[in-house]
Length: 350
Image 1 (tube, one colour):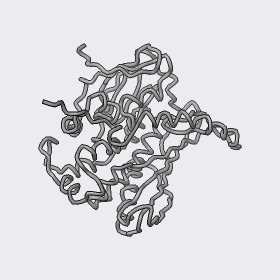
Image 2: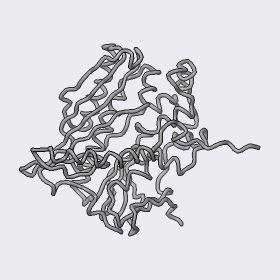
Image 3: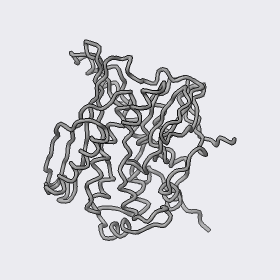
Image 4: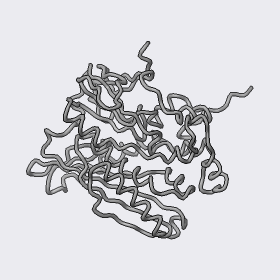
């Protein structure tokens, strides 16, 4: 019997390693523009979760931008557009708060093949709901009709969030992360807005085959553990962590935080760890939602690939020396002394 070939994110058209290579190649180019900033100093390197600028009076501006990716194709096929706006805000503000900065304002860029007003209003409704959850103001944006670039029913979204802090002392940069600190995880609501190219490959979902794709999305799958369709599961909005993180910052010492997006649990933690620190993550300390095991089984996706491509049920991570028991937070690991900013996966019982 021939062994079924494993499916990887790269097979689905997304090469995380090449993305990392691209960032490394452009870091120096962007840095040459930093001296052109006449009103302050850039205090972060490219590759962090947000960009931080210190103004001459010591105040901090934090900026971030992101999109929703090919999850939008699910919304387009099902003609349901009221949740991906929440995803858009979430992808931006969850990155912003990693630095300990709360979002202040949000703006969007919406590009459409054809402007259908009801659809555009539904998209904005989702963004407004995301801003309400994030406690930030949506102050404007840009809507562009791009016929020929997008089909009449197609669109893309980009979001931009800005936050403010009084001084560097208010920031959480990861430089205070030390061996022996606890690693906590806040559960995700599901896939959030990552790995959808992999998901679409496994379930055969594509704009070029709308009839078959819509049929697959409208199927109720018992393995998901609840009486909803695959499409409803995939359109579940990204969880926004702003208010929970704000409360935790008031009560506990937080040395570092991680938004688990593209790159999953494997690639994101090193972005905030010092060079002499690594992280143990114990996979038996939480149970991922059924959608993750379904993807693994149907696509023959290895666990290592899942940990690199998805959040695997943990959407946000907090590193602290304190014992934290608030909310639905789970202790999932610890920081260890080991050069190279590695992430090691194991079971706690080992």
